[in-house]
Image (tube, rainbow, N blue to C red; front, side):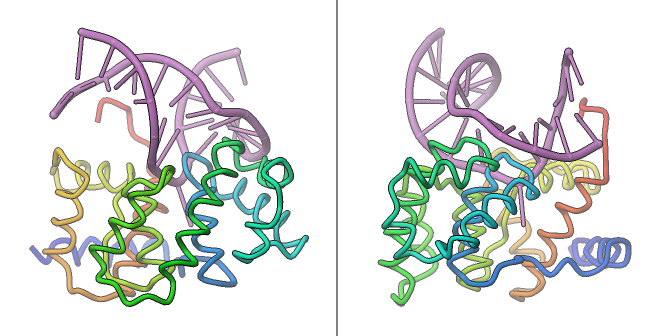
Length: 194
DNA sequence: CACCAGGAATGTA
DNA sequence: TACATTCATGGT
């Protein structure tokens, strides 16, 4: 099934290279991955800029400030109380695992054990912050499969297996493909009977 | 005015 | 397993 690769090339031709993830550091990717949950990226940028302005975009600083202050700074990204708490949990775990040499599957389980990190967020962190080959699935990706390939799976990991088994295992391809699918999803509006 | 965005946890049956 | 609800701001 190199049809997946053909689809990738047509997306690339149509939308151009996306160059995800926009961030100054790996840690900023982790923060962004949590802040962007069910929120548009524009609002995440506002929250990130608030943190950047105060030089708070480091694990040490995030753990230092009280939740009440963190909540105010990240408010534009929505769900700010949950996210403030979850940023701290993720930061503690990030410090613990960043320099460790654990297997990708165990790394994924470590992330999934945290409150506030589900499969999509975990895989985003693994791919875009840890530079490990795992294919990120989101709502757009599922719609993409149905619209372009007439394919539907039951589980998140079934979609992930499908992409990982039918594409060359290249880090940059994984990163770019997911970004392109999101860009496609933003532009592609369907009647919601899909 | 309604609807959704680069989700996840919790509760119900 | 399959849905429904909650969390919440900001753009269109």
